[in-house]
Length: 148
Image 1 (cartoon, one colour):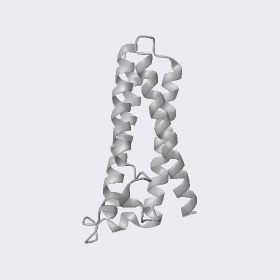
Image 2 (image 1 turned 135 degrees about the horizontal axis):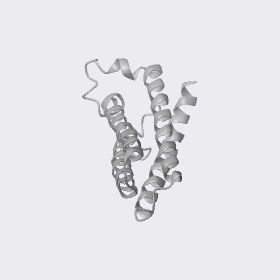
Image 3 (image 1 turned 180 degrees about the vertical axis):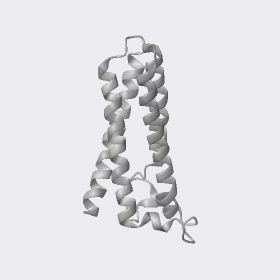
């Protein structure tokens, strides 16, 4: 079960990133046009995929015991342990908050221009936080750890 959650969490990372890139491109390309229902749905699908990713991540955090390690001594000295217990969680949670607020504020904006600007701004911030917080497979500090 843990392996399945890890694979789903890893695969959904690419779905979330792809949805964010498409959302940003659409918001940038169509900033002179009217805000379409398709762009609203794209923002909704991006937000839903981020929330599913959060639930999978929280399940992994509890099942693997990362949550219980946070208060133990020596966790903050280890780069990998600190990243897995604190940095990854806080960074992706902030990205989720920016993505959710961005979707909500985009829906409530009065003009199409404001909707495009808000979607571009908040999705861009969320994407940057996700890229900074994800343990990428090519990072040298994680190549010896097969348990991630």
